[in-house]
Length: 197
Image 1 (tube, helix red, strand yellow):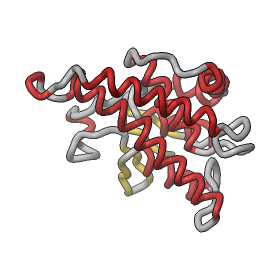
Image 2 (cartoon, helix red, strand yellow):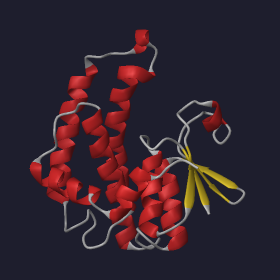
Image 3 (tube, rainbow, N blue to C red):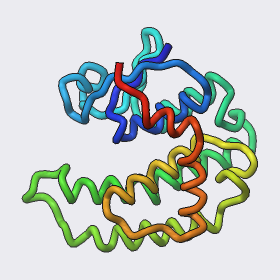
C-alpha cells in the first residue's frame, strides 16, 4: 500500500487520482506545503510525497511517471515513440500550464509581499488561455494521447481545475467539455472524496 503526503487541494491530488485510476490502495496524510508533516518527507516542505515501502519519492509528475512505469498503466512503454510523444506532452504541460499557474500563485500569496508583482498576473492569464487554445487543437481523441488515458490527462485537468480556483478566465468550450468529462470519471470522484487516514 502507498502513502500520499499532501492536501487534496494540491498537486497531491494528481497522484491520488492516478492511484484511483490504477486501482491501487493508498492512504493519504493531509499536509500543507512547508508544514512540519511535509518536511518529514521532503526537507523543502514541498508536497506531494509518495511513500513506497522504504522509498520516499517527491514531485507529482515524477511520482506519476514512476507509478505508470511500475504498474504498466496510464503510460506508454518506455523506449517507444509513443512514450516520447507522451513525454513531450507532459513537459509542454509543465511549461505552459503548471509553471504559469505556479508563477501566478507565487505573486499572489507565496512570495513575501514586497517581492510580489501583481501586475504580472494579467499577462499570465493571457498566456494560459493561449496555451489552452493550443491544447484544445491538440486533442486527438477522448484523451490527449488518443484512445488511451495517460498521466498527461491527469496533469492537464488538474491544471485546468487550478486555473478555475485561481480566477483565471474560462478555457475554450472544447477543452472545457473535455475536462468536464474527465472530472466525471469514477476515479476522479473517489480521489476527491478520499478522507485522510
